[in-house]
Image 1 (cartoon, rainbow, N blue to C red):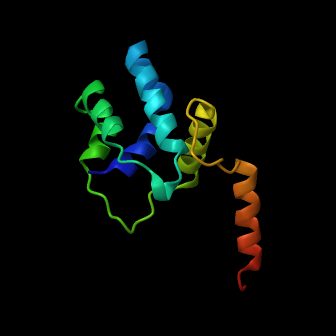
Image 2 (cartoon, helix red, strand yellow):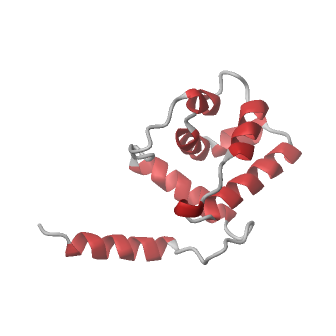
Length: 124
């Protein structure tokens, strides 16, 4: 299944999805995304509960469900464009504090500084 592609679509269409779900279902979705997003990538739990909720709460023809039907390429980047990355970072930032990660997560500034240092250290 295309769980990671579905996370991209979820981030891009978060407000639209919010409008489609009742309050209880959206609260459950928000909690699942907060938990999933705050876990370090290497320790990230199987997103089965999140996938199950999205697969049942959204209409059959919804883009998130279409993404779930795609297959994952384990070695492909899950972020295809900068706007998707920005949408995901903004979504995660808005959910920060709703789930407590095992280890403190870096801030967006920490990531930007680390990326800049890595890029500047690379051979030109």
